Amino acid sequence: MKFSIKEVKKVVVATMTLSILALVILFQGSSQAAGTTAGDGGETYKAKCVGCHGADGTGNTPAGKAMKVRDLTSAEVQGQTDAQLYDIIAKGKGKMPGYEKPLGADKCKELVAYIRTLKK
Ligand code: HEC
Image (cartoon, rainbow, N blue to C red):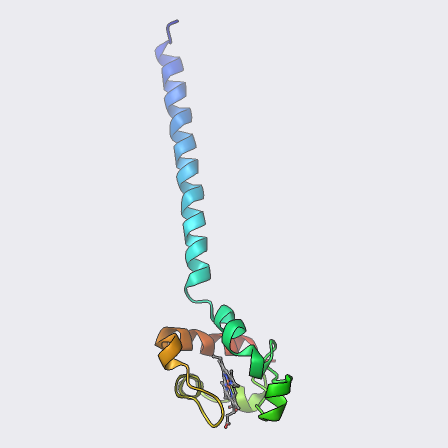
C-alpha cells in the first residue's frame, strides 16, 4: 500500500497536533502540582494551627478558649503589619510556640498571607 505526499502530510500534522496537546496537558498537570506544594499557607494552617486558632481563625476551640487566643479575623489582629504577624508566627508569643525552626521562613510567610485571607 502506498501513501501519497498529501496523506503523509496529514499524518505528520495529526501526530504533531497530538504531541503538542499532550505537552500542554503534561505542562498543566505539573504546574498544578507545583501550586499545591508551594505557596499554600492554607495547608500548613490546617496541619499546625487549627487546634488552637480554629479552622476559621476565630479561636473557637477548647484550646483556643483556654488560652484566650485573639480572633485572627478581627480588626485588632488584622491591624498589625505583616512583619508583626510574621514575628509572632516565627518566634512565638506567650503560650504560642514559634514555627520558624520546624517550618522555615517561607512557610511562615505563607501563613501570614493565609491569615490575611481570613479577614472579615
Ligand atoms: C498551642 C496553641 C497554638 C498553636 C498550635 C498556634 N497558636 Fe497562634 N497563638 C496562640 C496563643 C495562645 C496566642 C496569643 C499569644 C499572646 O498574645 O500571648 C497566639 C497568637 C497568634 C497570633 C497573633 C494574634 C494576636 O493576638 O495578635 C498569630 C498571627 C498566630 N497565633 C498565628 C498562628 C499560626 C499561623 C499558627 C500555626 C503555624 C499558630 N498560631 C499556632 C496559640 C497557638
